[in-house]
Image 1 (cartoon, rainbow, N blue to C red):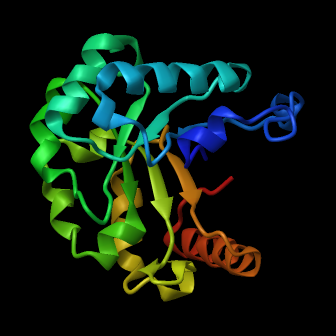
Image 2 (image 1 turned 180 degrees about the horizontal axis):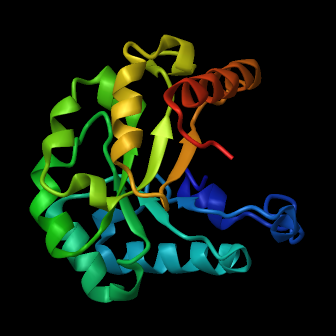
Length: 204
């Protein structure tokens, strides 16, 4: 997770150990929340390129981006059209992606669907955006968001909503349990496995 531009640009091998590929995992990258959009798309492009160089050895499948304005997004991709196949825009508290949907489809971008944001901020309507399930590449799963952060899955108001989303996703979608407290993460993983078993869904 590259959350702060300056700090992440300073990462070295202590932060990104060279033996990470030996774990046998696949990787995706959350791009910083403070990308320098005010300085224009060229600066953002240069920042993303520098971060890409740091994690090239991990061969990340996707880049998650909190949505900028439509003009900023188009300007970035005019400079870096090759990243469009990896770029996934996330629904956030401030932006549910609905206003950007034309640009997302025109630019053929992916979506990172954040279930916690969806249930916490009344964004269920975005599930009706045309073709959204074909664009979801990553699903962030947790129970919701409050002032203390991300809640465990035991706080999810309606687990059947998660079932309905999973039933409509493509098999290549990455599911990320985005809970940052270890005991809550462990409990959420156990709960998720029990739900998947109850729903007859393969969880590997």
